[in-house]
Amino acid sequence: MSYDASLTDIQIEDAYQAAKGRYAVIGVDTEAALERAATLPISLHCWQGDDVGGFETKDEAVEGGGIMATGNFPGKARTADELRQDIKQAIDLLPGTQRANLHAFYCETGDDVVDRDALEPKHFDRWMAWGQEHGIGLDFNPTYFAHPKANDGYTLAHPDKAIRDFWIQHAVASRRVAEAMADAQAGDCVNNHWAPDGAKDHPSDRLGARQRLIESLDTVFDASHGIGPGCVDALEGKLFGLGVEDYTVGSNDFYANYALSRDKVLCLDMGHFHPTESVADKIAAHLPFHKKLLIHTSRPIRWDSDHVVLFSDDVRNLFLEIVRSNALDRVYVGLDFFDASINRIGAYVIGTRATRKALLFALLDPTARLCELEQEGKLAQKLGLMEDMKTMPFGPVWDMLCLQSDVPTGASWIGEIETYEREVLASRG
Ligand code: RNT
Ligand code: ZN
Image 1 (cartoon, helix red, strand yellow):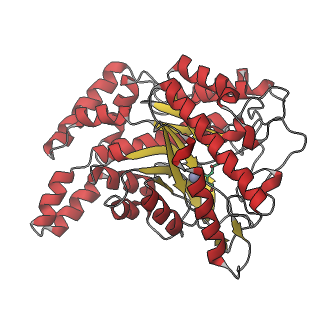
Image 2 (tube, protein in one colour; image 1 turned 30 degrees about the vertical axis):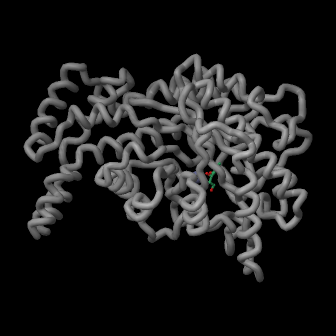
Image 3 (cartoon, rainbow, N blue to C red; image 1 turned 90 degrees about the horizontal axis):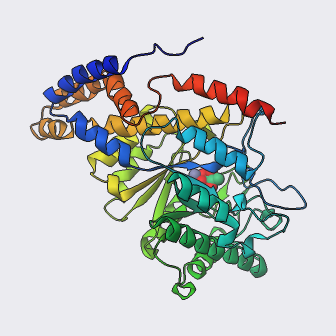
């Protein structure tokens, strides 16, 4: 079956020209929006491709960390080569600029068992060569979970100094890897720290672990390591995780303060707040204080479930806030979801296209006009125009972005992942 009416380039162009005219009436320049929407990099999280498993050479399998991919759709990447192939396939179906976001446990150490505190840039040589070959920038993350020394539920905030030191060494090692990636790609590599530390039930001492986390992080970021500015460290807070329902040491408040006081980037993950909180509203609350923000687009359903991102109100509103605050050059955008129950390349394509759609949608906002109406006290007019934007001919502008990027328009990418599923994924055991 076919998933999309196959439109000719001329039909796409005609529909776009009509849409362009309608946006122009309210002062929106679709050409400028298309140009800007293509250039903002979106970093594809490598962990959607293998259900957050990693490729460490190790003797025993370890899980945990309060996150979990559910589902058993066949064809998950079993090796780094397969994962690179899958991510490349996804990127080939995506308009605009994409990056790839690696976790430390996607290292390649051959037959050697290399523990996390001993990782070196050379263990990511093949990823870096791949990035260079395809012009894909890399981002990085230390992996503070799925490890025997994380089994107590504490890492950088562990009461045992020896365990803290191990994770501090890992964090420093990760910064060196990120620095090497930045050098190789002659541009920043965002190194995002998320640690699962926390407690299942009421701790009697909430402050102690937070003080230990501060101390550990200050050691990790100490200037004496001599790590260059290409490694851009970010810190991601969280509300709760599986098995750490009551208390997360690195909560959102904690990291907002830590990042601000240490001049680090604050990461906001859309799944890491109370379900009724608006992550979009946080943008303009943090921007006056923080130089930059890292966004993880995700989709929580009832809890931090990390469903595939869709073109939802939440994601649109988030990008609207970024655009209305004129802050596109102050955000890094990464994806964070992991669904093992559907074709994983499909998951990448749906989630990344949804994120870029939200960006383009936001760039088509008649912000100047809305602000004028608001200042004049014409609030019904403002609300009415906002509402009308939702049914403007956005689809043709999106199609034009895909056409300009030479990737499938509409839903026609679905056929391509079906072919890939048949020809590549089906042969994986
Ligand atoms: C976990 C955080 C974190 C992870 C990845 C694997 O809740 O969102 O970003 O998903 O680091
Ligand atoms: Zn995240």
